[in-house]
Length: 161
Image (cartoon, rainbow, N blue to C red):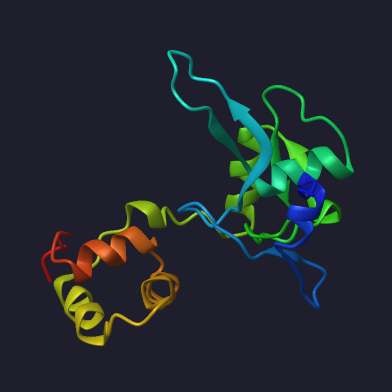
């Protein structure tokens, strides 16, 4: 018997002491959880239907609180992108979300961060290839895991020191 979306969702949540429900499955580059809600999209032309991924915190909001009106963002009171606790989520416009982010000092544009050649060298020197190490280094240096993969693979450019 296949599991319901809710059962699959619950299996991917760890409960933290601070009240956050932390998403333990895949995340996007910004740290928000990805969840397959059970939907499939038929692309037509005999192509196999593809799964539809949604953001886990948005799915949680809809399941526990209600529909998300068009043009609304689901924001986090706890400032933890992996949190899916509906008590920590609230609706706002994208402008509200950006303002909340700036007010709390979280607006840092890390996705556009350029690391120095010295930091690239440090990352390459510390990288051993161990499972999960790219993700750990990404968190430590405030960049995405694909950025670390590019650095250790020699494909990323650095800013001059």
